[in-house]
Image 1: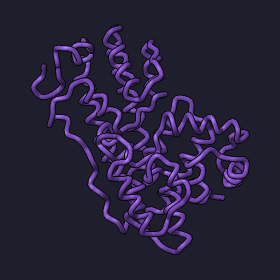
Image 2 (image 1 turned 135 degrees about the horizontal axis):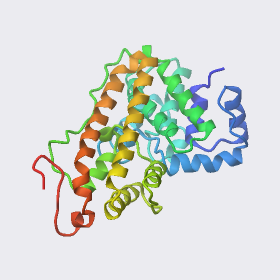
Image 3 (image 1 turned 60 degrees about the vertical axis):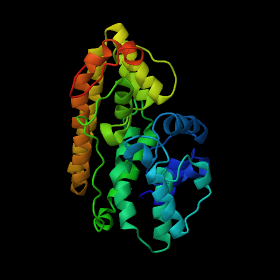
Length: 305
């Protein structure tokens, strides 16, 4: 039995209760134990680490409630889709709401190929981010895989809509200080991968460091500053390069399994290639992290320091 879009939607939107968990297991998702235990895992995953919003993955700023959110809301209103969860989510472009909208259209015998094509741009990448958590829970790993497969199974419907031109930033067009580099790395639309708090913490631990609990931006910046102060710059950069390589392999595998996703995989891999070029410039900047904010504004860019 394949999970329905409405069931997948509920599982992304809120902690599974006993009834929803039972339906999920009947539909073939991995057993996750009791619902009370999964509630804490859901919170850690979707509220603290992987942000399941289109804006987080498709906007160069990486910030929530960007143009993607407004565009999704306009579609919902036009189709008469207004679930209660819409008011509770951080934005209308939440993956669960997107899945619910597609289920709403199915129930009405309608289609929205352009919207489906747009979800294929980023939801499979969000699913990889869930799977790339340092200790992915089997239930949510299964949820991510099932969601990706459910959307990719509808590729013929989406093929009738043209593939959007991928968003990318040219790292040679502007000079960047450390703060801008951090923002670029944290925005999948420019970096090609999603770095969660947990993933940043794992990279720090591999380099022999620990990071404070804070916002994702502050955690990322603390990683780079601590690397510079402790002489572990190359170890951190190597960790980021390994992370990029693993994402690249995931994109390649997904494209091989679903040839229709090859163009999208190429766009995400192109972003990763830009990130690798950026990382090659970072060691010079991280040598004196405090100088970046106080006094000597050394920059990464075509002109050098």
